[in-house]
Image (cartoon, rainbow, N blue to C red; front, side, top):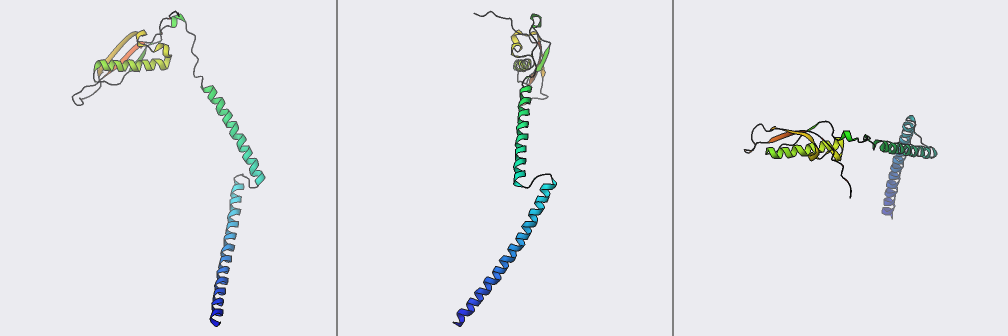
Length: 177
């Protein structure tokens, strides 16, 4: 029985010592967490924020209302931004627009470079004056300026680039059926 009592005393001592350690750690952690909580609240209040549940709910509501106002303003701005410019009324005298020049991509032949210049000119005419003016067949005073675009030759190949200058014109009106 003596060995049993000694082992129980050792066990009780270990439990008490361990329990005291756990109580000490818990007390230190609790104090530290309370200090951290006070520091966090001080920082929140110093920035003008709120810490009570009712104040937080009111702050969230104000934030939602501000977000809704920003979204409404953004929608109004988007609606305003959709109208870029209003086209002037078309008069019979305004069949052709001012001279427009565009440079195409380089190509291995001069004919291909002219086709690239046509594409670039049509894209620019469409962007500036609209689709009615982009047709190359309706353009007046068209002229090409072509030249070599490569300094040397790449695998024995010379590249060309062309510039097309023309007045974009809209087509004649056609009668419907």
